Length: 349
Image 1 (spheres, helix red, strand yellow):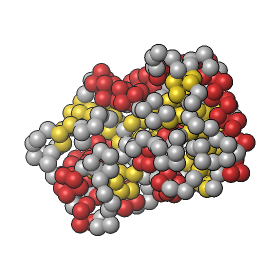
Image 2 (cartoon, one colour; image 1 turned 90 degrees about the horizontal axis):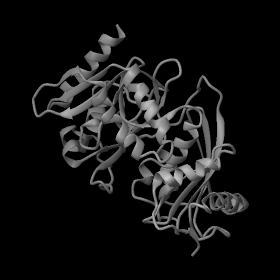
Image 3 (tube, helix red, strand yellow; image 1 turned 30 degrees about the horizontal axis):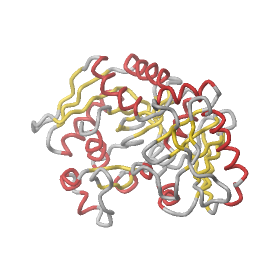
Image 4 (cartoon, helix red, strand yellow; image 1 turned 135 degrees about the vertical axis):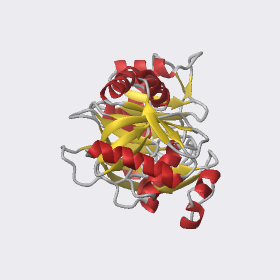
């Protein structure tokens, strides 16, 4: 099995892209997806990832900006002459060094060394390859947000950013919910949807700072642990739910509980940091930019490979442009949704 070092990395990335393009006719499945300002054509094998591409996105409707196209190959050695993934050959691997070396060559990429799982992208040609050892040798989080790094690289090249945050909205206005796992983002989003609010995403959304701050939907998946699933009444409502995922959570989709069609965008009026207070009533109080930045940036930087500097700039801009609040969550989902709804109504009026 070949070994790749920082010195040979750009050549290896271009080799993978060339090999995938040469084998294009041998990929058994093609999926086309329309996202905000982006049409994606994905070539891959049948299976879990192909299924995820069928229902994992919120398909975009008419958008106000021109749409471009990109092409992604989800490959493994069972397809034509695709090679086995290389292993890392240098003594140490760092995400920053890897991303910097590729960026110097005009490329983007990520390597998950536990699985010899490669993702490389040429943002100028808008062509990318995800190379795995077998058709199902992907990290467990991949089906919930398929092709996430490729979307991140493509949108970042155009001044937008995938952001690890939840959203809730009313009449086109919305809030971003930022925080680490367990802070209550997902439960707050689900509570809002069940009680009349809109959302453009629970985990990752596309943030754009052109003409204010807006968030657009990408992924349709929602997640809840068994306790939250029961507390929200979803066990009775979603009787056909599947097994627990790798995090011990149930997964379902925005359309399963949304009161309306997912909006094409929300104009964001505030950034909120939720936390589970243990009290009965919810409350909203001002928060410092520092606290908001600490809630927003670490997971957003760590989960989006490459573009670290631009990420810090964007998150800094978000906390400067948006008023920041601390959302103390009560115990009743309907009351939580009402607290957020009242805040949004005041912002709209």
